[in-house]
Length: 562
Ligand code: ADP
Ligand code: MG
Image 1 (cartoon, rainbow, N blue to C red):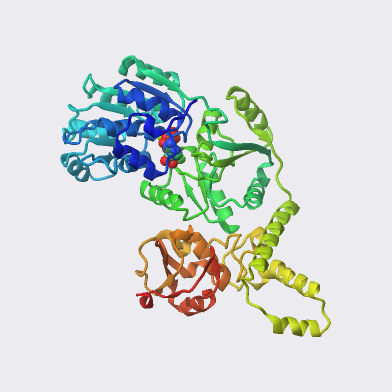
Image 2 (tube, rainbow, N blue to C red):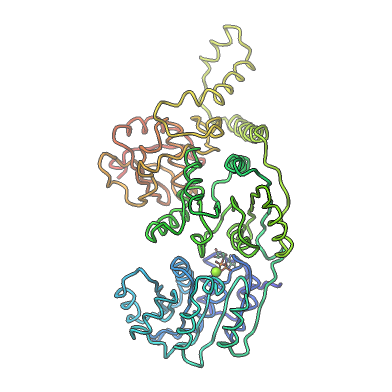
């Protein structure tokens, strides 16, 4: 399917500028196909894989069609979940950044009505909402749709799955007859066909086939693993590929809880999402995950529905999904926007038959793989260590220790022996060197070399205990906690660091548990880090001169940083 530059699609200068600012180089196939038809006023049915850019495909023409002078609702976008409504609203906001007088508002359950009503009264023209709440506003008369030009159903398949069919019909019945109707979905089950028939007029139908060129590049592999060996297999794969950001899907809430605990205990930074977790908590976890505040999200399908996270390195199917469609939905979260991703699926015992039929009927391309052995993982680590050592030597970026070395040489040790002994100490000696009360470390992590001083952390530091109030719980609110002092660190977003990088480095270098670190506020060129008062001096002293992401750290108390 073809792609075209945005400036060939008949867009305004304001929108082109916004698209450019977002860094989109060219329109994706669905965008190329759909935008011109929508600008002409046609109804559209758009089907393409998750991650193919459907949001901008409808949001761009929606913004173009709004009359900024008319302060009435002109576009209504229905989304299945509150998370999705917020995300779509954010994208609309960015795309409309240079359009004066165009306003959007997300409308969803759980938020007070008066806030939404105020935004509507202020003249928001684009409403992005969940069906239930939109219907409420229509019934209460707090949202009038008589000037509506466009109604958009995003993730239509999911909305039907979630039982919104009646609500959708009620909303559609309340829209004026002349409006444009848009249906977007990753799949087109028959139920959607019915809706399309009823609510569209001679629609342009666009279906972008998932093909190697336009779908995200996802390497899909399955592993035959005994049930009880799954956790081990999971951690080996994580270590082998050095993954830092991914989702692990389980089939039950209980499994989610259990796996979260197990991974956490092995030193991985994890959190979880499932149906028993309150909405507030879910939002918190989702936001934190998006900020890369932890590494792996353990989730059920239901909880992860509509979760839009970019840049996932990997999706694990710890438990097999129900069918090919769920599989496609799950793995659509990796390999987005032209980046490559991986999807690893575990099958135990007889599940292999189920997977084979999914592969056959869903036309999936999943290859069989082998869980890496301990030796292979060691080799990966060794190679990485070798590279680091070589770079450090070549760059000459290390403190010299000639006196110690001279003394050893004088005692008759060869330089190769001295070097070997040092490497041995760095690798093996580490675990014992951890003081009592340190956070739990997985054997595989403890053996890593990453926590050495003067050595830019390739491996992660232990995740600290969630019950101690995780560090990245309260970003942007440093300096509030009693017993903590705020330290100024001369690295920030510019170096692409994450809170886990900082906590990891501090825990690794100082040997204090990660729990001594409180809130972290990442700024562009610096970071404010709360550290337990009792350890603050030690942290300042030990962290000075340590390198992180190419920067030599020079921490000072924030009070002195001015
Ligand atoms: P879908 O709704 O089809 O699942 P999204 O609209 O959420 O996909 O888009 C997935 C990601 O791709 C988003 O991060 C989005 O910003 C990005 N994206 C969308 N269009 C483009 C484009 N033309 N070029 C590059 N990235 C894009
Ligand atoms: Mg979408």
